[in-house]
Length: 214
Length: 267
Image (spheres, each protein chain N blue to C red):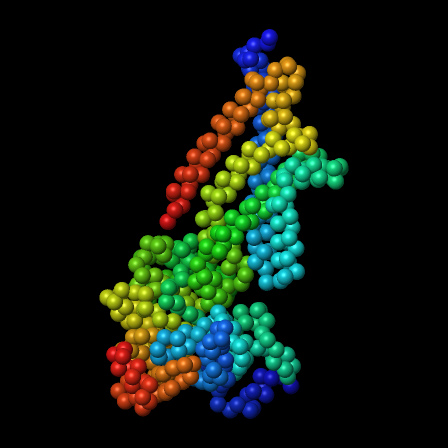
């Protein structure tokens, strides 16, 4: 019978895991950028006065939210064979989360007092300045905590990238386990690294929440 | 034939600053304005009085294009406001046209509606810079002047949340004036202020009224203010003008029973 835990193997696993962790971080950070920007674009176009914009964006949004992330990853992976798996992964995760983010932005935008819109009209402000100088600064302020929460949950969903052969931390842990016929050390450490990275982030978000409360 | 010179030859006296012709406004089944006609000459300061729900605020909101009329024509300086001329025909105004016409009009709201994410100075300079295209220096200088005029010299860098209601409303007045409007709409500007602060805001508005030739359209429950500042008072009820006269006449000697009852209730 093999022993359940060997410190030797654990120490050997650390550099491998940290290498995978870099991919995890990269995917989260870039995915978050895609999600934050695209989510805003979705939220704004869903308020468009033109049905030709509103309707398809709404339908796409609904479709993406009602299908699993893994299915979308694998689908895109086989559809775009010329693009690297990591790029596909970042884009798909980004788009997937953009649909959730768009709801957060929407709530934030709806939360801006009607009087603010009226004041921009009374000052003859155009749509670009209205959004950039008045509506978005107020809307985003109230959405920051929710956006942070999505960042943490996106971070924890990056292991799905294994489905399209991207070696992020959890896949790296599994590969390490397969080589050494023992998985416990690597997968435990991977879990710990997730905890160490996301716990301070969620604390930060909670702090932000109390600071932003009026 | 350009329409401008045509207008000049046909209309010898200058066109009224504001003109409502047969304006209809409905909210669902409720008809708030029912074929309203009235006009305001340049430099006139007109107070609208009447019971709530009589359509006074709706008139201001129609002018500010916060609401759209269901019928009729609104003109500013003889130019249709909600419609634009395409050759000889009148078509519904484009958003761009409306925005250009709107720059002639400023509005001060009951709830101030300052931008909470900007400082007092930014609130005042935002539109002059980005709508009128003023340089930052020019806009800042004007903001400083206006803040002095409303008695808030030291508050340029404060945020609205740090100011009292009366101070916020004074910033809102400065912000509206910074756009150099030809028409200023005042929508119950003192209704959400503490009684002891009302006087300071009204004093500033009185100053502006008496020192400029801005056309003013005022909705207020402050009858003394209406008396001091306006040169015409329109009494509204049920979306129609019941009576109109100079303030002195209407307040001391109203002709219509409806006006008498209303004034008895509020004075």
